[in-house]
Length: 333
Ligand code: ADE
Picture 1 (cartoon, rainbow, N blue to C red):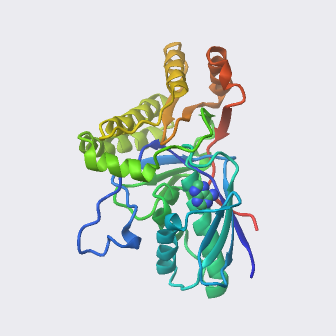
Picture 2 (cartoon, helix red, strand yellow):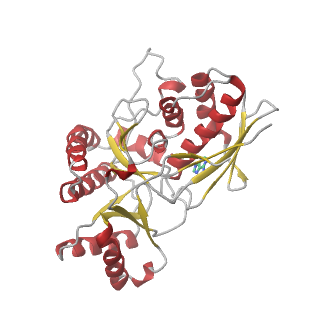
């Protein structure tokens, strides 16, 4: 059976998604195809240079299987994705999959976004080789979303939106829209996170008194960010990136028990970045479900920002990665 090999890059949200929409009772949405629909608006970039690479062939034993970095992954995590994909593609076969990430997994670098995007593309390619029907990108986005909402974005390159209530993501601008934009990934720890984002999100939705406020704020921050991105104005976009990040964490801190992904080193970086900004640098921070910090700046400032950070936090030597906006799906075999 022929192997199909696809890569996808992680999708890093500038404007955050945190929390799933609750399916309306009796609509059938409670089943697989309706799951993982976001309740908030997100706007993200694909990270060039980081990727998940996934090899898939059709299974001949009637079982879906995922090997992740050489080890069998928990089938429960993937069961909904595979049955949803069969429904969407109108097929009945199963897939045998092997995937690797060229960056730390489950550590807050959006590995599930690239992982499920590459998985959806490779499985769909293996199926299309049988059915003869190519799978449209929009359907790939929908399929990837069943695995992880942010994976819906990772099938597209460049600047990508996933609206509240949407089943698939959309490309807002190609990567060359803003060639000067850079993301600095500050790798604080490679250890897998203790709380899965899936569980932490649900806990926030169910117990945080700030969750409603977070949802209500989301459309306005998203709309303003779209405008700032259209103008390529980091002076406007940066504070929105920071506000979206901090409000998301505010909603998590209000959960019972609170959700806290930050490490002391994460806070040290946030404070160092605030000082750089006070000294005139145009650099803005974001974080996700993990201790890593990601910074947005322009190419002309990236080297200076890294140099200044290493000046105050020399332990970050070898832990800074400057990336361009790119990503999306690529067939590699
Ligand atoms: N979750 C994290 N990384 C993954 C990958 N490469 N494939 C599937 N699921 C993942």
